[in-house]
Image (cartoon, rainbow, N blue to C red; front, side, top):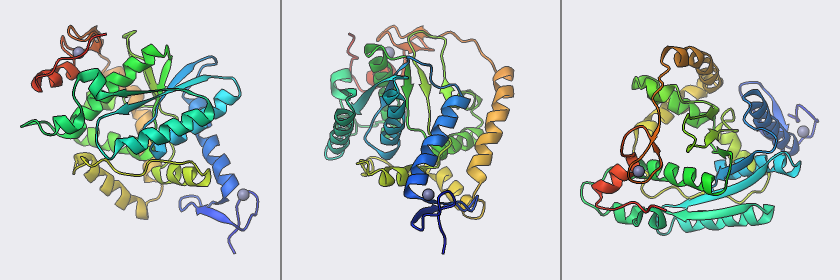
Length: 311
Ligand SMILES: [Zn+2]
Ligand SMILES: [Zn+2]
């Protein structure tokens, strides 16, 4: 009978195809935490005394990020706060917000919910009724980043932690490679920094952990998560890439790891070769950092006939 590779416990919850390693619940939890800590140390994601804002949707990735970073908070290495973005999607977002609130309350972490409605005087349900609107994910991605970055400044946070996992990173690498998008490719990484003081740097402590294992971690730790998928999700290029990687991984279980490792090496050269010094200015409408005179949020809002709320 198969037993835990580490402690010989006969109750195993995972058997890793790539290494043959079998782990029981406690050893698996410890293993995932160690993996995240290894990424944090290797990539220098955290400095002592940092205040880190977790972008907390209530989904498995962000809840696991909060849970793991909280171990640093418990040891008084960092301070944590969290923001949940309410896109205004009826019968969907409410549950995620409730779950995010429960976790932050339980852990005693400052938490704020910021809505599209308060920030932009419109929400996703409303936008989806505007004729000739773009695909929902375009608005969501751009609007959410704007809100989270502003929340980080409001909280006086030094960094923003997101729940990006190994699958997300490999999808982004492949997508942008196949599309020849060097500008996007060179900013993929464990930590993104910007020259603009208005931007907070972003860190991804879970980027070396596969999505499936993050799901299993939340189950093993009995963490409540928001499971529902976004009702506006539709077929996307990312989805197609995700399918390809999943299929490849069946017979090549280490393919995601090797893609990430290879990319991280290439990236050093990529950054040298394609370093651009474009200065970030502030958007003339909303004051947020933008490489153009008018940022994408304000461009989208203009298309929708809305004005941005300037605070
Ligand atoms: Zn064990
Ligand atoms: Zn703007």
